[in-house]
Image (cartoon, rainbow over all chains, first blue to last red; front, top):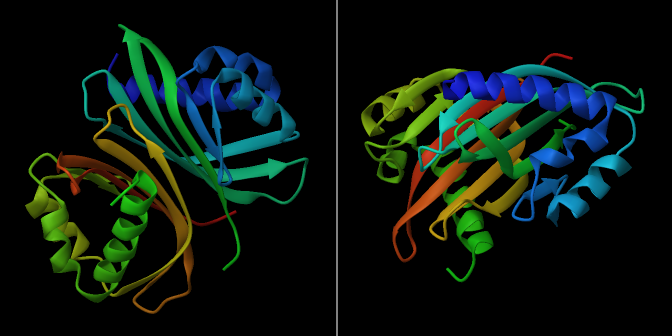
Length: 121
Length: 122
């Protein structure tokens, strides 16, 4: 699978799961994973899952996805933009970046995850 | 520069000030290895990247948020920026941009990855 294919599959899976059953995202993270959610930094699967499950009901619409190779052949950078409704509120712009790292061929985990809403002009 | 946060803060200040005032001066931040994606279009290497940056028109960025994380090695930092930008004095639009800075020596970073997207339409 090319990096583009990996990224596409990852994004589809990630947002579908985040919107329907957040707990099922746990397998994507490990002890090394770092997430920054609206400026708050959280490390490790347990803490990350706790944060994700506290956000409330979400519905994401992905508008753009960019992919680049990171500094090693086993790491991919993914950059997502779109809109999100939280608890059925008005849609807000969001952007999120991931660094996926392969532990084995085709087996990636999320090493870095940064999420921000983009509102106010 | 004592921490990744300090490096990131200094980098961002320099980057957007320079991008707004004189884009050509950003050249030293990129190398032949640098990859930039600008609104979905990918450019590799300083020359191609600079050509794109100088073609965008007059820009004025307002940075609202900046997040920093260590990347997969001690010498690499991830920076995630959100804010608004005016292009050719138009209405402000939301933008987000991410960078991966890689150190070639102590305190000496170049931009290995740069991804820029506008975020409009709801």
